[in-house]
Image (cartoon, rainbow, N blue to C red; front, side):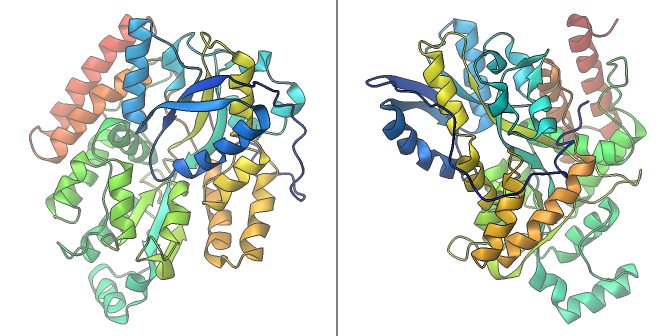
Length: 436
């Protein structure tokens, strides 16, 4: 289980410098790409015309979907043998399952260029010693909250009377649950919302499971998430669901639905990804912009954070008809200027120098909220952990989340649901030869 961004706290400074990478010339060539879609990700694609003008090539976005849907589409392409595209959005959680679909970028990019990336982040992009992806942003969950609600004297007094604590951003998951229920005033305001399907649900479950001292697997790859820590994690979600402190539809939400609800002022607190920071802090798109607060994610009963983390990335297919053009595109979309664009949106960048550059940029451009946010986000990197970096992770995730979802809505008893999911996961690991 890799830790991310192990070197992210000792970062390089300095002003932005001109690129010295040779992006090449590909006049008349059309590069076919499959890219993740969604509010957090698409601003970067406005740079594509720059790459086209520089190289003489054109980019054809043949697919742009939410990542879970894109993952399913890529697997269909693999199964049908129809890999007719060159660059695909990838993720450290998904990459191990794709086998030899993608090239080893170490064979195509000079080490001097690779040295510009955060070493720990680049290490997490490796699969079996091969660099199958160039990371574009690092994700780690943290808290967004509506400061106006926390500053309300009546709410402060009521919370203190009920819980014996000051009303401040939650430091523990128990505090988090209490505040979610405390703030909820449906249908106009909910305490929070959570991703209730796909890896969004299994990842959130994993995060709380780990914060409670549990894990998905033991050291021998035996599934152990049906432990007391796992039951407590599902119970946490069920408690806020049963209290109607979250929207009823949250069990079918993905990231965009949660982000839209937070920006609309419908949520008091949101445990979410760095990429929403710019959107939430923009008065043109967000009703909470003037009152947006940031805090590190809560700790569980173990005293530690779950630290669910990973990196979005770009990969180049082995079957690409112009690998140099595809590599050029992937490097361009993760170069210093691209990483600066990602970072000014609140994302944790993957190039070392961008960290110090962007804090100064926030200060120079009168964005004090985002300047405040970045050091908070960096704090959370100390306990950042990826999901298991094995090809079977998404398959295991796909047996976990339906059972967790069923237990949350009361269709199945929690322990029985987790036991069944663990049995299915055990079969997956045995079939893969990882568990005897």
